Structure formats: structure tokens, C-alpha cells
Length: 447
Image (cartoon, rainbow, N blue to C red; front, top):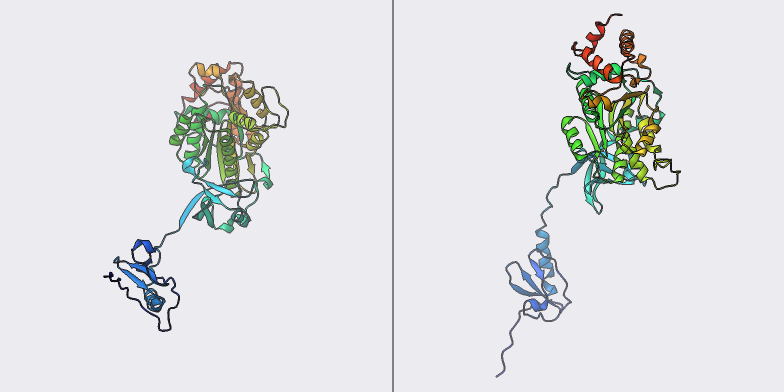
């Protein structure tokens, strides 16, 4: 006796067996023939619904299933709020840019937002601008596709800003007072010996272990306390990582741009240029900026090591073209008539035993309009600040000091003339300690 064949129910089309087609449905899925064990006859398809029930469907059932699918539309996607990113843009030579964040000390990162050349050209973005925009993911990672604001203003704000290079440069005229508390003798000495004005280009000449870092910290704290509206940027290049951390914790209000000595040469040169470009953008907006640069010598080393060649090698192994960019960075300090001012106080290392360091110092010597010279012999006696009064001074200080104060300062210098540097600073410190402020001390000087 022959085994009975298993009967399969079919839905036949009234006009015959039309070829079957794939039908979209929310609760049915097309299965391969071997997955169900049932071979659909003809051109029909084996479908599996959400209850795991097998059915053979012919084209005759297409209309009813399609109507069911249209009656059950897919749920709309969940709302994803737009993400916004804010940072300092660094524009490359190819036209595109990246946003650098302050929490990373403006260092390069794989998470930096990419800015397309079209956005840079459309809005006229300049290196060092602080921008905010809406971001989305792309093949390059996060990408800025809609600009929201520039420096806290609308994107069209920068159309009326002047170019830094076109501003008129004048001598510093407005004084920056660093005196804070009576016991802070470092800043009080600087105010007397080498006063600083807005737009000053100052050089702190420092041998090793003369209190250079402490002096910079005291200057930074004084700027934050006496001039909270002034933008303060601290640039540390090739410094020890612990010093970077100490500066960040000591002066949290400052914009710290650092590339410690565990970073590569490219990072040193990039951060140095970005810091000055950031300061220029603030000056264009009419703001006054104070930059502490530590150190100009190590910046010169970095650019010399990054130099690909083509220039003449001078004594000490310095390429003749290597110091062009560091010289431009230092020369950016200026007081302008139409906008703000950029003050730079940079340290230069001497007596390090390196001919390269000595050559770099000689290249920058005389390029500033203020010098503060520290003496190793004074610091060896544990006398701070270890300032050589006779070698320190400010050019055109008559523009910064009132006539009466300038006269009293000249009396002090004449009284200390003839003494050795260590004796001169000891006498001046002894005199300062008697008075709670420099103004009161000058008033009590006869003459």
C-alpha cells in the first residue's frame, strides 16, 4: 500500500497560477526551503510569522497582506537631541581645521571635531578662534556641520574685525601693576625695577635654579587678581609635566597651553603657534591679553629640531632659518591704537652649558623693550627675587610711570650704584620691607 501524500492547502488566484512575489509584512519573514522542512509547491513562498507558524502563500494573498502592512506603520525613530561642541579652531595649510579643547591643554586628540574647508571658507574662520557648532558623526569621526557662534557672538560677527597685522603699533602707555600683598616682594621689585605696560615685549633672562618658575606664578596671580578682565594665557613648552600640573592648579583662571617634555617636537611647535594665534584673535576683538611664555629658548630648540634643512648651520648647531618663527611669535607683542594689546613675558635660559641656548639668547637679546635679569650668585645666597637691578629695566619707562614716581625710582638707582648686585638687592629688599606698599615707600623718599 502506497503511503498517503501530505496535503498542502493552497490559495489559488482566480486567473490561474501567477508567479509569486516577495511581500512585505510586519509579522512575517521569508525562510529558505530547508529551514521549515516543507517544500512550497510552484512559485509560492514559505513564510514564518511571529508565532512560528508555517504557511504557504501565493500571489493571491498579496493584496490582503499588503493592506495589513499599510495599516501598521513602523514607529517613528526616537528623538536624538543635537550635540554641540566648543573649542579653539586650528586651521591647517590645506584649509580644513580641528577644534582643540582646553581640558586637553589644546593638544591633538582622536576625538577632536573636524571642520571642513567649506565651513572655514564660508565664515572666514581664522586660526585661534573660539567657535561653537553642531556636530554629527561621519567617516572622519565627529564633524562640525553647522556653525552656531564665534567668540560668543553670531557667525557674522567676525566680518567687522580688523586683521592683527594691519593694526597700528605704538609704545606701551598703560601700566600693569603687579603688586598685590605687602609680603609678595617678587612683584613689588618688578614694579620698581622693570615696570610692565600693556603691549610690553619682555624677556626674563634666567640661569637655572634662580626662581624663574616662582616668578612666573607670582606674575600670573597678580594679573588675575588686579586685572580679571585681561585674558591670561600661559604657554609652557618642553617643561616638566609636574610643573604643568602645578601651574594649572596655581592659576586655574588662566588658559594653559602646554606641551611637556614627554611630547614630540611637532606638538611643541604647534602649541606655541596656536597660543599666539589665539592671543591675536582676542586683540582683534579689542581685548587686552597677557601671555607668559616659558621658555623662548626651548621653543627655539623645538623649531630648530623641526627644521628640514635648507639653511646655513651656525655655531651651536642652530639652523639659520630655524629661529624665524620663534622671532615672529615673540614680536607679536604690541600695543595697538585701533584694538587691544598683547603683552608677552618670555623666559630665556642662559648659563646652561649649551652653546645652542647661548646663541638663541643672543638672537633675542635686544628684540624686546623690557628685560628682567636673574642672577645665579644672588639665588645661591637664598635671596629672592634674585634680580640684577643694574641689568634690568624697561625702555621708555617714562610713558608708564608718573613723573614723581620716576624721579624717586631714579633716586633709588643712584643710591644703589657702586654696590655689587647682591648688595643692591639686599638693600632694596630691606627698604621695601619697612613699608606696606611701593607707593608709600616712594612718598617717604626725600627729594
